[in-house]
Length: 159
Image 1 (cartoon, rainbow, N blue to C red):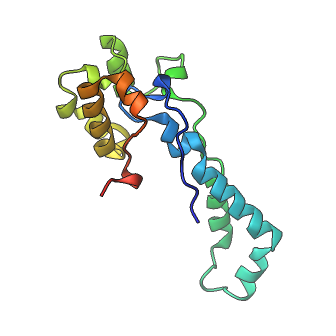
Image 2: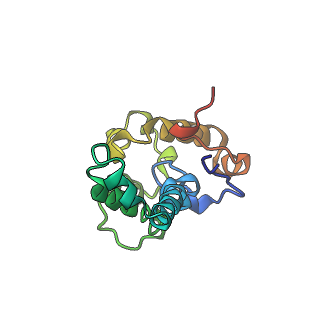
């Protein structure tokens, strides 16, 4: 069963400039890394490589590559949230834009709904969630949004 992400208390500084709430980010929470790490341990404990080669030689002929990808996924942790970064040379155009305008986040911009930087950021991965978060923050204010404690992301859509 998948591990359910629980946000205990939202914090203002975990809101990225773009509107993603880092406290729910899979890289920040480590959900994927933890699951992959546990899977790696099981594969190693039961020496599954032997079964892959003997019992499933066709289906798992690239087992070494699969295992390498699991090891990689076990390392998928965000090293720090964007607000903790001190270098302005990072490639996030959204962060650069907000900082240059003196904004805490994109919700302060009157044009965030039509922003090409938001649409193209992370290849549109979180775009719908970002827009929903930003609209709510703009409407109710950051402090109320934080107290509300509900964020939007694509893996936990409301029905």
